[in-house]
Image (cartoon, rainbow, N blue to C red; front, top):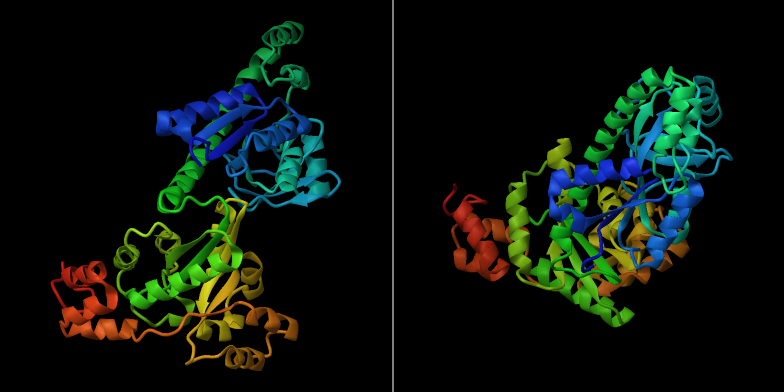
Amino acid sequence: MGEQPRIIVFCPLEFERRSVVRALSRAGGAEAGSRSRVVTTGPGAEAVAREVRKAHEDGRADAWFVLAGVAGGLRDGLMGAPGIGRVVDAAGTQWRPDIAVGPCTIVGVDAIAATPAAKRGLRERTGADLVDTESHGFARACAELGVHWGVVRGVSDGAGDALPPEVVGWVDQRGRTRGGRVVRDVLRRPRLVWELPALGKRSGAAMAAVGAALIALAEEQSRMMEMMRPALPIRSGTVILFGGSFDPPHRGHVELPERVRAEVEQRTGEPAWLIYVPAGRSPFKAGSAPAPARDRLEMVAAAIGGSRRAAVADVEIARAEHEKEGVSYTVDTVRWARERLPAGARLRLLIGADQAAEFHRWKQAREIVSLAEPLVMLRGPVETADALIERMRASGAWSEEELAAWRGRVVDVGTMDVSATAVREAAARGEWERVEAMTGPGVARIIRERGVYGGGTRH
């Protein structure tokens, strides 16, 4: 992506932009500026949509587009910057962001909901948790352009708080505060002297929460980029996800997927890359005791070496460590990858024939197919496409049309006489030459030095 920003933050108001810039600068110094661009759009749905289209026309389509600023709360107890997983408008149209998601709904309206009664009415009509005057325009524009987007809003006024009626005149079309207008209104209605500090305090707290949320978002994207972008300059073509326990990875895990990658490039005429995703723990191997997750991650990195067309991602391992859940679901990983890859890249999921035969048992199997069409490694002449399709037909889970599509996903990669079980057994016996022959020197060194499978020196 060169010097292009990884995240573009769209702030309707200038004070919101300044707050976001301060937060990102404190978190990342000069580096934050290279990763993020913060734009003041001016208030209102059309102003935000116009800036979104401009950023897209400027060649920023690979960035994450985030609308950030303050919003009103529509239910009691809402504070901070709650995660937003749905945007609606007054007509009932809805959009779902693909980044910075959460359980809350925000409704975009064309006029400020300034009173508790107005907020209560919006809550009753839409079921929304928050309200602003830009999210519907932002969501519509992002959806039309096909960019990755999210909404991060801090609650500056709760369901029971009233905004001064004069507030609509305090900001100009460019999102800047009209200081003279504020002074004039204070002179006309002195009670504003007490109302304004409270509003300023709430807005400051809301933007502090927004800043923290944006920092977390930037860190997430940065971590993903560090894992994937340096080795894989992905802008288009095909990205092939290859998951598994890799307990340990062996030459078959490297050479057979490489044959698939080469076949995809030949079929499409475009570049293809492999992303290895070691599992936290497979739901189909819940009773197994794999090697430590970080050992497996490092072994995969050693197995693929310095390949410019392959990388390893720790998304499932990190998820298991963070959520303490230990089970890896492919649908979550596919969603993760699809949300973060450039819009021009195709996503495929590499699996074996045995996995294809049992694919109907996978969580959200059809959603996986729609987001990352599988590629099936067929180890001919041991396996045939006809035999695989018959096994899948016997499950009763697939229509004939779906089975025909599965046949077209088969790639014959041949066979290799190696298995993870054989590697573990050889390591336990201390047969290091055999281990290296099956895994390569880098993986063998990690197994031996760490005593991963009972042989070598454990430390």
